[in-house]
Length: 335
Ligand SMILES: NC(=O)c1ccc[n+]([C@@H]2O[C@H](COP(=O)([O-])OP(=O)(O)OC[C@H]3O[C@@H](n4cnc5c(N)ncnc54)[C@H](O)[C@@H]3O)[C@@H](O)[C@H]2O)c1
Image 1 (cartoon, rainbow, N blue to C red):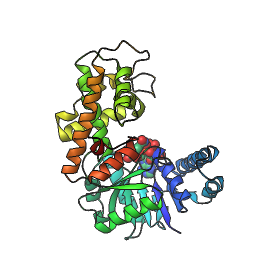
Image 2: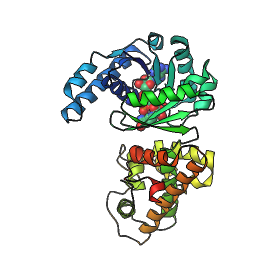
Image 3: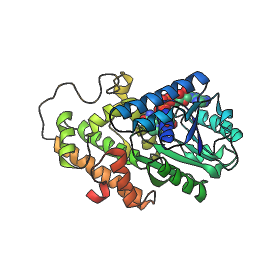
Image 4: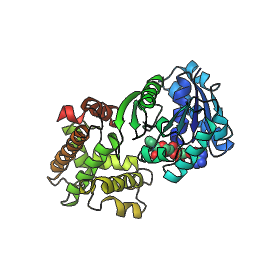
């Protein structure tokens, strides 16, 4: 039986542990201490029980997970794992320290993955003893239900490692998409570009944000408009990704100062109760269709850039947007 180690038993690590256990793997779950690893194990099993209750998983399969997920005492206990997935917080220095410990703990031929949503796999690999075996495995939240995994090849990642990561994602019941590393990868790059452009268009004219979101949903393949999506993701998380992408790619990711002041006031979207979408609907102004058109044009432009740069194949870009962002059709097929 495959033994998989997971480091970081938080939001993502706990659900990835569940996914691996449901796929029949033996899971060693490590966190900063045993207590947190146990808490992650309990959350993984609770998520499994909820999925069984809703009829989305076979209750017997979920029950079997209790015997497969083992909370362990730290990274050193991952020695038996042939595969390790790191899911500690998004901080390069912290992740670098954790990868040093993983390197010291596991066999030289183990596959090591990071679930980073935006850090450079290449930079992280630089600090490890075996940069060729490190790969990005970007699961989407909630990992137990989201089908997409972006497999990120850094500059040093070997072909064998990429092949191993693609096979692992498939073994976990996910649909992998191969991505050559770039800031934002595929889904975040397309979505955040489209959102930033929509925010810029809306900043220049009065807009009813409810109506603008509705126009996006009614007029194209996205399941949600940019304002509601921002509130769902969390404006602090979105602003951190957006500002990194603006630093990487320039003005096309600028948002005319839409997000930063809201974040400074503690208006973070759904989790804080206030965000981009006001509680009450206002009067439409006629600008809403412009915002929607800008949103889709920007998504298509960014998707074309990804394809032209060879970051991913056009069909994989569309697949990633369908499975990772819930679009009914990919931006390249729709364009
Ligand atoms: N939450 C999301 O929506 C999401 C989606 C995709 C990817 N990601 C990425 O997944 C990673 C984890 O995010 P998360 O939301 O699960 O974070 P989280 O804060 O919920 O969980 C992180 C876990 O790592 C543990 N940890 C901290 N330092 C550690 C150490 N030195 N050794 C072992 N464990 C340690 C923490 O105790 C915590 O349990 C990040 O890189 C994030 O960018 C998150």
